[in-house]
Length: 68
Image (spheres, rainbow, N blue to C red):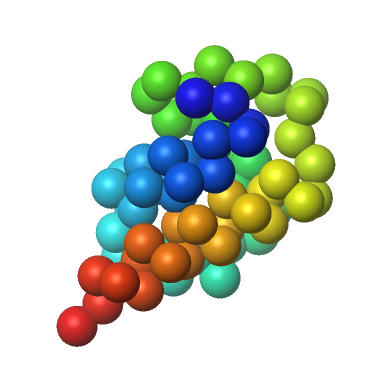
C-alpha cells in the first residue's frame, strides 16, 4: 500500500483499531498509524494533509458502516 490507496488503508486502519472514532485522531497520529501498518510501503515523507484527510474519511466510512 502507498499513500494513494485510501480505501485499502482505511479498511486496514479499521481492522487494526475498530474502537477508535477516526475523526478523533490527529493527523500526526494518523501518519504514525498508517506508516506502521503491515503492508504499507509508501515513503513516509510523501504524505500531505489532503492524503491524510482522504485516508481519515475512508477509515471513517468503514467505521461508520460497522457501528451498531
